[in-house]
Image 1 (cartoon, rainbow, N blue to C red):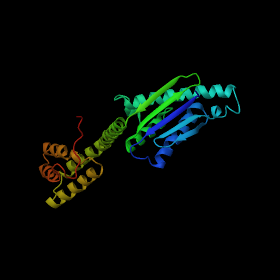
Image 2: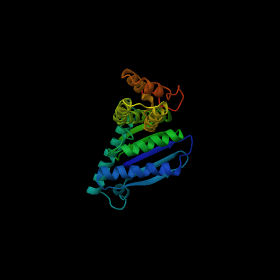
Image 3: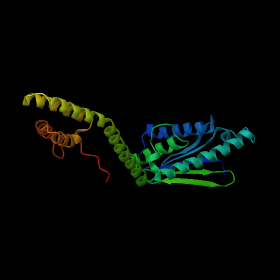
Length: 253
């Protein structure tokens, strides 16, 4: 038995060549980054459901350059890389840890590879298995079902949507305060109904563009509490019923 990493993809829908190529590309990149420059090579690819055998370049050259420090280092690094992949498969399946996937910033060793594998498994309905074997007969395996991959992708997308809304809310708060101050200042002058409506339309358009339209009800209440009834009525007139253009409030359910 050889020191090798076996990637098996049992697909329902054939994966696009670009996505399959991305898996090999990020495996090579993760391995290079983890080992500070070592090369991961493909030694065999079997047809049907795709099974690819990969190993360290030094190990692939064993028939020609037997033994030596490079071979020992290659075997050790390949084993460490397989452990990292197994760890990230575990993170992907964990409700608590899966949010680490597809995040911004520097990627940990093996992270990009598992992210690419999860994406392909979800898109193609594939069952994926990664297996590491050593010359001593030791094995290490990690696997991912299509249902697990789809669940991971949906969870990550939901998490991103929540974070994006929270980011917009954080950005919008100063703008909302400025809007209320602007209404307050305008309320000290004698404005015609047309002027009031024009001012409200401008502010509402800004809030909608910023994704904060769901705050209009709160703004109207605050305006009413400050005695700016004309402005409050004009703002409420802009609030759409459920299903309209304005965004609903963020919930935590």
